[in-house]
Length: 181
Image (cartoon, rainbow, N blue to C red; front, side, top):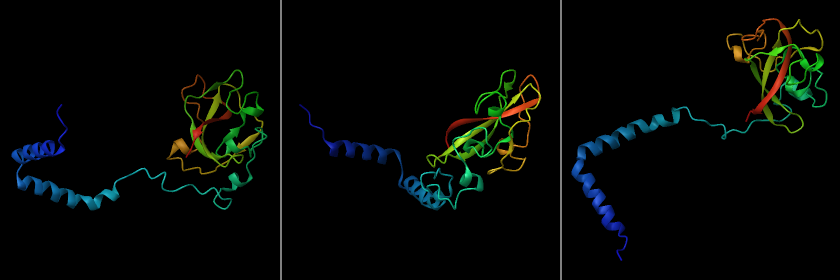
């Protein structure tokens, strides 16, 4: 039975490396690595785990400090932190469903809302329901973390009925996508 001999394997590998490379090429590679090493910390790296989000009351937005979880027909319902328009939950639909006779837009804007029940942040997709006259019930205009119009995916001032059979706005839904952390 043959025994595993790490010394012989290591020696064979080093002899093969020495036979194929020169000292100058090894020195050039080591020098290049040393010259590039200071630049590595500047590379974009996902540091999401490095900093935990601050969920203290002082760090929360005005909306997050007063949000509630019971009444989805009120503008201070926690999912509505960045909604703009009539709430579908007041117009015959639900928090995440369009009323009968209207169709959801295939595009949406997004927001990150904090659920006061558990203190976690969630990604919310706001989708307009289109194809019926505007519902004039429960109109809300929450602008928590809203950005300028040149970043449209985070702006709620646009009628998001693109891709539907009608550009007529009816109401807005707030679909929970998942954890924002």
